[in-house]
Amino acid sequence: MASVPTNPAEPRGRESSVGELLSDVTSDVQSLFRQEVELAKAEVKEEATKAGKAAGMYGGAGFAGYMVLLFLSLAAVLGLANVMDEVWAALIVTAVWAVIAAVLYQRGRTRMRTVNPKPEQTVETMKENAQWARHPTR
Image (cartoon, rainbow, N blue to C red; front, side):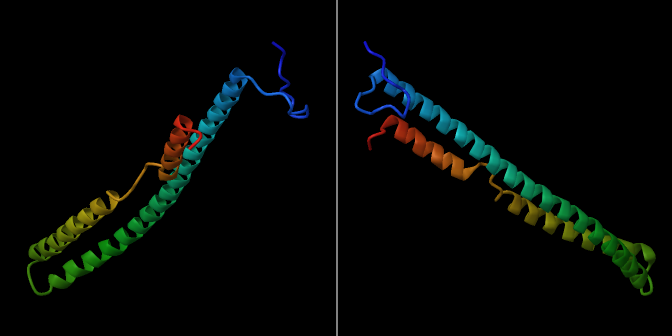
């Protein structure tokens, strides 16, 4: 059996064997899957970077808000202490903060459930690639 030229510069008058065609398809599929893995890595890295930056901003805002609320709470306790016993004033302010903490916890929990760590675009293209690999002529 004569060897078929693999050089693209050679004339196309000769037909490739089935083995060569399968080798080409296998190589192309491997390349495609490697590219899909790289796409998935890029997507996950991009989302993780966005989440990290947002978390840092939340951290800074949380600390600043903590300081504001600490001094506001102290002012509220001192203000209420003018009209009632200091212990009751402190307990009232503490109870208000407990309610606020519970509400914020519930809202944060609800929002966290909307986070999607799965790379949707990559999963979709992988499904399309798998379908094409099973039926390349469709």
